[in-house]
Image (cartoon, rainbow, N blue to C red):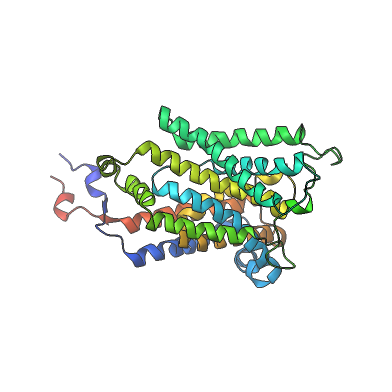
Amino acid sequence: MSTPVSSFLPALVRRERASLAATVLAPLVAIAVTIILNLGLYRLMGKDPAAVMHAMLLEPFISWASFSEVLLKTGPLLFIAQGLAIGFRAKVFNIGAEGQFILGAIFASAIPIWYPQATGAWIWPSMLLLGAVGGALWASITAFWRARLNANEILVSLMLSLVAAQLLYYLLLGPWKDPNGFNFPQSVMFQYDAMIPALIAGTRVNVSLLLAVALSIAAWIFMQKSFMGYRLQVGGLAPRAASYAGFSEKRAIWLSLLIGGFAAGLAGAAEVAGPVGQLQRSIATGYGYAAIIVAYLGGLHPIGIMVSSLFMAALYIGGDNAMVSANLPVAAVRVFQGSLLLAYLVAAAFVRYRLEWPHAAHRRPT
């Protein structure tokens, strides 16, 4: 009788304590592995790997014009990732931030579209608040289905993103379509007071970046210093212990999803009231999905997410540069982002677990 094949394979054994150094090195290792793998992919595609990497990783930081665009894209990624990370740490997986982002943009756009002649400094802050409410309301649908009917929040939130996109298309091809827009699916341009003030003169970077940093600080205080944040973390790490302590699972679900929806809606509002200046069909640029990578690459920690948001924003700008200067297809840029998430998840697994090989005696046939 021979020994089963499974007895020859290593097993993953959870470490008693994750090393801080390994936790910090995991995203760096993931980035290095991703770069190496994609260099081989670009070579197989017949592209110059050095030119692609120069355009993707270096050009965003070479000139102030490029770096200002990196800062511009850091804002929405930072908003969304900080909101998602709170839910992820509580083991509530909101994958529908893209739809919540769209609803935030729609809710915020209602003010300048319905009141195009309105003036005053109150307009853009009201748009941000209304957009955040819109994102939270859209996330509340997922929370209801998860808490009351035990539906999978991953599937529900993801499907609702498709519904949100269709709602956006309906509005821009119907009641909110600009009559003077040459039949393009877009709203009217917003008035001056509906635009977020610039943060850095001569660039498109606006005050929403400061708001994203403030949200990051608030997220750190909430998760590290508040009792509610502590309950969410315990619910994610030890659900049975949380239940024994009387922590409500349903409350954690609602809170996690509402926070994620609020942050994503705020990002959508900041996008239409910031660099875009109107509601467009192309407002859904994938920030909601990219923010998932940002959250995990930052180790689900507010400070780490600030760094990973900047890095992912650079990839956005660098990817655009590579498509122009190195003739790289957009799919290759998405592959880079996806492989980065995969590499980090593998690296993070080895931070928490170690491989344990069977003893030699177990490997000898009997």
